[in-house]
Image 1 (tube, rainbow, N blue to C red):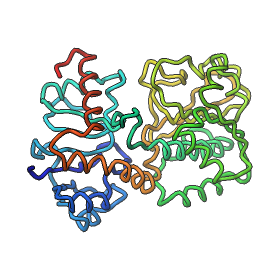
Image 2: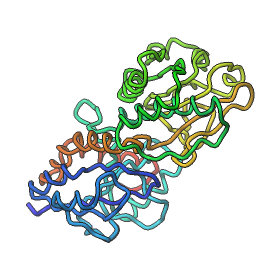
Image 3: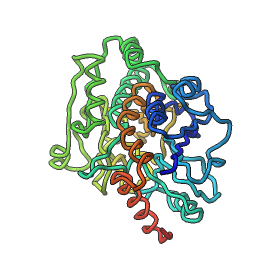
Image 4: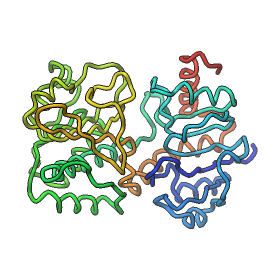
Length: 360
């Protein structure tokens, strides 16, 4: 078996501090005989020096110069471009669920002969994702909801730009300092999933006295749409993983009658999907401009829809994700055949190509 090569690229998305492979993971791969190359970058939660000490080779080169046999590992989507891609890429491509622009991205792989192993579609024999940031997305989404609630009681847009926190204790302390004992009534939709559990854990960590309405599929199914109960809360957190078309939870008609709701934290954040259940916005927000106003009449309602929330807590998020992904990455890099988890990912890629009539 020839020695395998994994290439950790630097992220192109502004403000992204997370990594899918920690220095601890690098050390394990190197001990297993894997060659690890890390692009030099000063906007990761782990330093270049930590990777080098773990056994990685640092490089100034871009992944586009990597040997064709390299597995190129990253997190977020690539910058828009048109050149064909010949590498095997591992990252969140956001191209397998009919998102806008997906065909153009996938066409680059069809033309170049490359493949995407989308991290969202690496699943085990039960169909469960092997690694996900959902818990920390919910955790940070709830944190940002509380921060927005406190801020907009006394200010208008714009909300200040966000940076990452050293750890969750620093984040909780920051929120408590802003709230001054004001405890908003909060609703979490999708409360039983990873994302919902993260949101509830943050709310309880900030204060055990925050009133939480925790809904999941049974409550959603039993309610008329849009869901008027949402507007009986100060904050609404959407933590539902969108798999199929569902009736809208919120629309402009609901907001026009709203007298209480002030913050929507759309942790699921899928505005470019035609099935988006939060039908009051059509674009993601960002770390530099976290909130937008979505109410057209009635009480002001502000919404956050940052699509890489866990980067605000990059150390905890990267360490958990890296631990979960590592055994599967190790299997991929030390096996002569494609392990089942990665075959599932490849099947999803080929299905996405076929949905646009692109050659597999």
